Length: 180
Image (cartoon, rainbow, N blue to C red; front, side, top):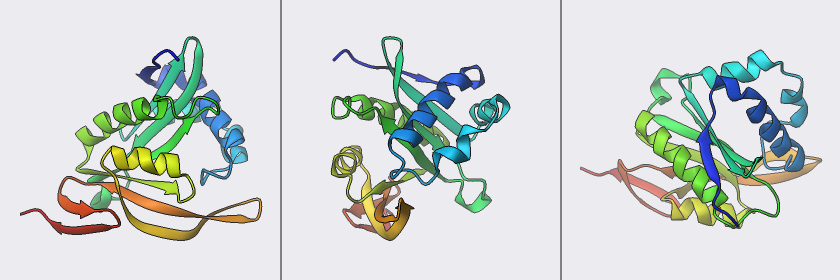
């Protein structure tokens, strides 16, 4: 497989963002907290507005002319939580997972997020072992488990909360006192 081209989307790229986001929500509905129908009817101004926000970044992976993955980061609106960015919407098309696209997307996403925040958090399904291994290899540690965090088609799924925080010494499963 050729190396993916990773790029950050701007407001004028809203159709690319819409297409890959809706694909992710349609093809992997059990993975995301948002359902396809919640975003499918939004008009272009909504998608453009998200990409215009200074508190959000969206990266896509392209192979040739096809957009095959995405990842985003955001800063929360709450003033006392803005020191921690949140990774969201990580998706790589079926059949292409495990080939480095997710790592390339996460590397670009983290590079920008960490210029805006002191630490980065994410959630991932406990059952998604390949994603958990990827995030651990990028310096994330599991800091908690949320039982029954998502419910899709009557099935509950647990999520790990993972953190990448250079301000604390960490071991898998715990965050410890700040480094002094």
